Length: 263
Length: 341
Image (cartoon, rainbow over the protein chains, first blue to last red):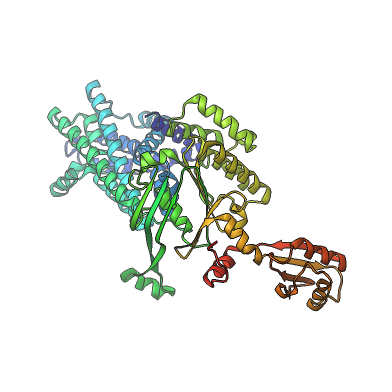
């Protein structure tokens, strides 16, 4: 186990070297947040609540969505894809380590880094600027944290699968583009999923992506019944396990296909 | 103990057509060529042996070493090392081996060398006392003590290779695989690494398998040599056999510092020396004022040849050229050399 903690620590440290890039990212997120802020402000001008959301709740949703997204915009999966494409994965295969485990550890390290360096700054600024809604209660807040952790497992599970698919595609661009598009749309990053037409919402709730953004934020806002909260958490747990297993299978089939360039 | 039986490995290589139209065609239909990198290779290596795997570029030796180290899965055949099947029992098997690939790094690029070692300590579950002792001993022997705190990216090629070697040995593996470990290193760096490997092999009775395309790399340190060409074993036996049989194909390259030299004049100078048999000499003009002399070691001692030349001419430089691996393979194929002793 301590090897995974060691890898998490190392990737945590590594990100600290890029402080300037953090500042730029923060500015970028704030600018985009202002854009959607004015967009939704215009929408809410026509009616005080939409689909059960007040403007303040919508704003809270967006701020949290941006904050969660920032946790995941990470170099770990690109590093994995590049290792596979360039054949550097060969060196890792000569070590008695579980590369999926290492991948999760490194993602946890970078996400924690993002959380304490960048997210806290982001939340302080946005809470001050937009006065977002506090969590419904301490129970809801702790369930939100649990849901967030499960969301991390889902997102990282998807990231690992995306990287491992590069054993076949030999290129990262296309597969990462597809992944990002699916995650942005079906996780509810841009719009709460129940704002969508019923049939589209149903599809979104069948797919695993809603566990990344929509589930934790719905729990935070306290708009859903306790029964629904338990359902969402179990659904997240189910997908986390399934995605990790799918990742393992793809990885084990993939490494049998390793072709190493250069003799 | 390493056992290989009829191991084969093919690669499918996509054929790309030329130009834009070719690239668009490639989107719909793709043709592959099959490259047989390793063709039905079998051999057995005992614990503690030090074996040189040699062949020209693209002979299949890297593919073979990647099968041995558990990275590649062979298409057919059986492989068993230390009681494990490398590609199947990868996690338990790799606990017992060390790997250095001259063209790839196992150190973490942006971390100081020492931090890479502490990660490896965790990976292999090495206890702290053993780890400190080994690191102390290795860094002393390979003179890298002052490099330990430097990030890997700031090291020179030779320094990096020495650090890689230590990384592969910290967990005291039973088998060590070295794929072109001295590629692109200067002679001093090569020697340091060679001496270290030999010492270490003697002390720990660890099996060492080393690939190279340069015979001189391994002739001092490997007793056994396996020559590979186009995926086949061309020779598997004692290094001494190769050295003896092919010493006949050494050449003397002499650069003269005087003019009016011709092959005839060199021949004439030898005719006065009864130790030299003219029949087995071949002399050809090289570039500038240098001449290549091919001689047979059985009848002509190299010392008397050099003696003779130095006494009769004014000479600027003398080199002894060993036959290259390509030449050795060619000679074996043409059956010009009898290898059965």
